Every structure is written in C-alpha cells, then in structure tokens.
Image (tube, rainbow, N blue to C red; front, side):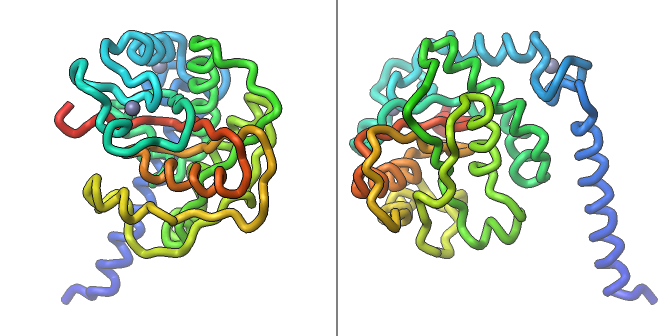
Length: 254
Ligand SMILES: [Zn+2]
Ligand SMILES: [Zn+2]
C-alpha cells in the first residue's frame, strides 16, 4: 500500500528538481534569458534586445504618462479612472508573452540572475527616451507583504531596484516606505477591488524633505499600488515621484 506521506514527499522532491533544472538552464553565464543563444554578460542578446526595444518604441497607441499599451486611440483607462499622483512611468517591456514568463521565473522561480538583464533593458529604454542621466534622486522599492516575503524569500521589486541602482548609480532606500500588513493578494482582485485595497496601504515613518524620488516596482498592473505608494511619499514631503518598473500589464481585452 502506498504511503501518502511518502507520495507527498516524492512530489515535493520532483518539484524541487524541476525548479533547480530550470534555474540551472538560465543561470548559465553568457546566455540570453529569452532565446538561449550565447552572448556577453547578464543581459539579452542584441536580437532579443532590439526586438523588445522596437516593440516598446513603435506601439501605435501607448499612454505617454503611464506607459499603458492601448488597443486603439481611446483614453487610457488607468489615467481616466484615477488622477495619478505619480509623474512618468517607464518600464522595460509590456507584460506579454514570452516576456511575462521571464518575470514569473524571476518572481516565482527565484531566478534572481534575471534582475541585471531587466535593469540593463530598462536603462536602454531610458536612454532611448532621453531620460538619462538621472541625478539628485533615489530609488524606493515598493515594499512586499509579509506573506509574499515569507513565500518567496525575497522582494522582487527590491532586488530589481538594487540592480537598477548600480546601473543608474543612484542610492536605493529600503526604509523610506513601509506597508501596512494586509492579507489580500492583489493578483486575485478585480481592478476596482485592487484600487480600494491599495488605498492607504503604504506609509512613511518620517518626513522626507527631498525634491524627487523614483518608485521601483516589478509589474505595474492598474497603477493602484504605485499611486498609493506615491501618495505616501508626497504626504511625507517628497515633491515629485516618478516610477520605473520591469513590466506594464496591457488591458485584458488587448
Ligand atoms: Zn536572445
Ligand atoms: Zn495612462
């Protein structure tokens, strides 16, 4: 008779082995994380990089403020439904296939070696849009919930901010912004529920009399999280808040 505990354990071991195998494949030095061809350093190969940059620069309808890829010339839903408290949002790429799976590997598969490649790509987006150099500012990662921190063992936004900080030569401030503990998982909520859940979620424990700060997130979906975080920074004294993120989720029907 099969032992249920043993079955569970074997299942767990198989899952670990699969995760390890997938991590080893992508951890090979000098391999493009998207197509697997050899290239120098922790970055995308020139072909993949150019494809991504081209798709971002040439999308016919993209909101100039929040970077949302739109299906037509209709007003941006995120900027129309809420007056955003952030300045410009810049992302490395749209959260669409096959790049979405890379972000999931980074976040859920703990492939932290992808963070430098994402940072490099975002750096190039900033360069193309003439938004460099950035100076007299700091990067502030969106704090994760206790629940996701203990599940993943790391905060994807914070790890990405570290790599971006190195690339942009900007300080990363991990203790300027805090998150109230709350047990709703954002990805399980509707657009409106996300907005309501995110309101008042973040706070600063002291005054921040600084002219400019840059919030750093992994995926920007409805802007409700970053808007709530920006409001906390502005209330603490920051004069202007921009946003940098790995990816931006296009509307569902797109
Ligand atoms: Zn490639
Ligand atoms: Zn917008």
